[in-house]
Amino acid sequence: MTCPLVYMHEDQVQALYRNFLQSQVNRFEAVAFGFDDGDVFHVYTSRPKTQLSGYPCTSAIHFLTTMPDGESGFAFATQIYNTMFSNGVSRSVKPSVIVLFAIQENVLRHRAFIRNLEGEFHEGIVKFIPEKSELYSRSKGLLETSVLEQCKIGVVGLGSGGSTVALELAKAGVGNFVLIDFDRLELENVARHICGTGDLGRYKTKAVRDLLYGKNPYIHVQTAELDINQNLEQTKLLLKDCDLIIAGTDNDRSRFNLNSIALEYNITTIFGRALTRACGGDVLRVRPHQGPCLGCVFTKDFLESRQEEVSQFRQSRSETPAYVPDEEVKATIQVGLASDILPISNMIVKLALVELSRGKVSGISSLEEDFVADFYLWANRRENTYASWQKMEYNFNSPSILRWYGANWERNLSCPVCGESHEPQINESEEDNIFAS
Ligand SMILES: [Zn+2]
Image: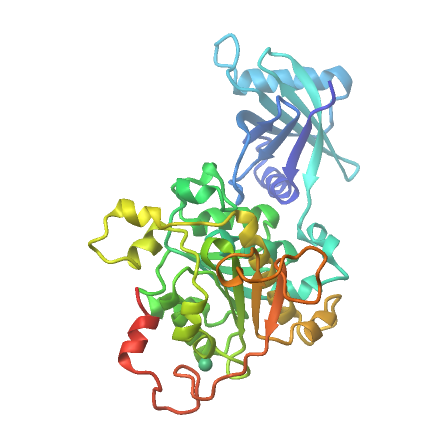
């Protein structure tokens, strides 16, 4: 049998050691989770920010002045186990992890012992999860992680698209997030969402936050469980000091609300959506007053020509007259696969990183010259909008699926939202169509 690995967070051990020096209490109860039949254990001394997994074990940590060598370590661990976890019952129903620490000649010594269900002790190897300086050394060079660490991103809408974008930006090194969504994770979401059945019933904001912390426990994540359409003023307060906003919501009313926030606070905002059955998608970067806003692009004709994917019952219900029964509404929900949504999320992530690194020296500077368009179309499958396109085969002279197309979409100076005329150019009935809820 290979030696089990026992992982601990460096900062938690340090805090415990300070506690030991001040209080002279040398024994602490901890929480451990085991994986893979006793192959790996994670020991926590305070509540972790991340999502927990694995099976629960009892655990204790003991500080000593000298580390017992050889067999005497086993005897010491057995003694700790017997005083702390043995309650007269012949054997515990949980494995137990005992970790011993000693500072000898300024060197931290450690030994870990695992008691299995049969009551046998095995020695494990202690590993430390480092503090942040070491966690993100991998992306150095390509992206200036210290720049991204200072950035604050607002992600509104944490469905399969928005949640993936948030996670990828955390992986890239973005240090601050505001996550806004009012939905809870339901069974029907799980197949396409980054969160799994272990998060059922939770607010998507909080479940996604824990995944982000799992990638980097040192980031800051603020969550708000609110509907932007019902709480516009609160949403504004949460987003106004963001460096960038990601609009991952699934309805045009919330998108237009985010567009107004972008224009009011001059924050670059990236909108993404999938078309029916994810046959394609589009991504719009709104750089307020420099390029087109949502109102310049999402005209009535445009929205009719490129129909959005309806993936949620709530979304479908709101777009269907009240006399249509729920069962019929459910039948209208046609979704693409998560892998069909990924290219759209990925494009949003790339655009976001280009915007956040703009003007700074980074390994992705060349992309600034490529991403000159503000609006991008993704062709995924030859159906609906793309039904008449030629087969991809070996053809690269005509438009094909599985490609992005940058559209030269100028700002519309008579746009009803960002236009220079103060007179609204759109009549009431058209506006009602755009904001249909
Ligand atoms: Zn506009």
